[in-house]
Amino acid sequence: MEREQWLVAALPELAVQILDQARQHGRVTIGEMIRVTGASRNTLKEHFRRLLEQGHLVRRGRGKGTWYTLP
Image: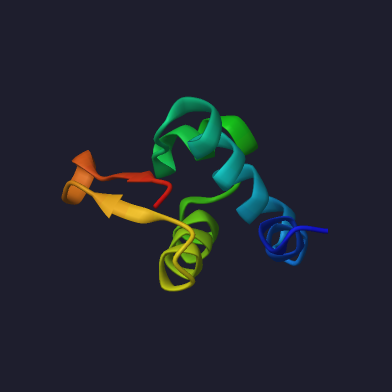
């Protein structure tokens, strides 16, 4: 198994969905993920925070205009 596949396999399902959305659409927002998954804003914010810390996502923009991309 490739290193990236192994790392993604170790992530929670919601985090994998976030990365898949970013991969498929080039970017992702918390609002989009609320609509796609039905998860709460606070739960998603925590997953986005962890993905940022781990280097899986890069934050772009500020405030309500924030979006995330793959590095």
